[in-house]
Length: 338
Image 1: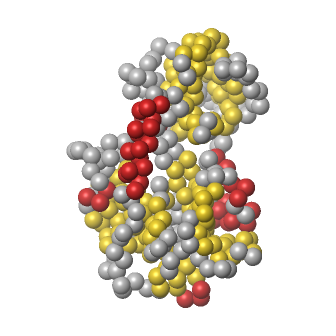
Image 2 (image 1 turned 90 degrees about the vertical axis):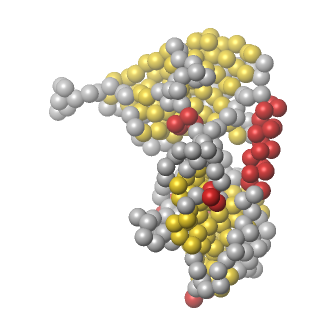
Image 3 (image 1 turned 30 degrees about the vertical axis):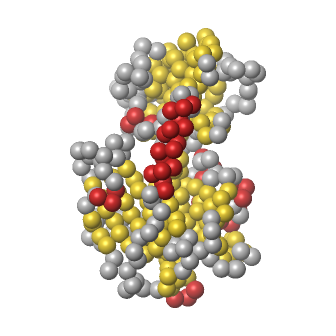
């Protein structure tokens, strides 16, 4: 029997950029009614980014955990307005959130909710009700275009002209050009099964479904499968598979960084950029201010038994988040292959 003193309330937490990071695109967001996300560090209770006009899973924070919330209802409002009721459920856990839109109006391209109510339930806790404001908010289109241009320019600087040392085990390979896809229906079931079994922290079905495939040979393909989606970034996992038998798929694991803690058994790369000509992958994990984080380079190489493995080329890390913005290439060097 539950002790009478045990807390059965839902510990809903307000959040801000500590969860949304630097994302500033269109979003469906709700915040505590007496807070302002423009001036208060913590104001949001629900935040769902948009991608190409599609609402992605939202975030809600309870205690120290950020839950990914998937929309459960199928009701769609007509015209430029929000539905009066929207139901969400956590992908992991048993939290639900019912959002009631009580008063709304259109303001330019935005749908503004002047008054709403959010009810959070859990099968072992008392319901929690909070008054909210919010709506579908989009930044200025011109600002978005400028930000996009900056992001593109930054991405271009990450093309992997990395000089690969000659003493690595195995043989260097090159890949065919990227063949992008934007829906998981393009990924064979056997590959998704391999990800589910060998990369259990990945949840491709809660991403936008964007990825790519690269020809290794006439018989084999390298698949870049979306793993997880975050506010301003996404992660991928790499899988090799036979073209005539995709069920024979192999999730590629990342080698650990020598003498640098427990980094074995990883498979997820954040914001990866792959260069087909040398099969080098570069991944960066940076904070909002871009003054700390990590940078890692790997190369896919052929080894004995007609197998393919990732080899670590370089790892940089700056753990102290202070000082001005710096390129990841200027972070302290932890390891470089020779």
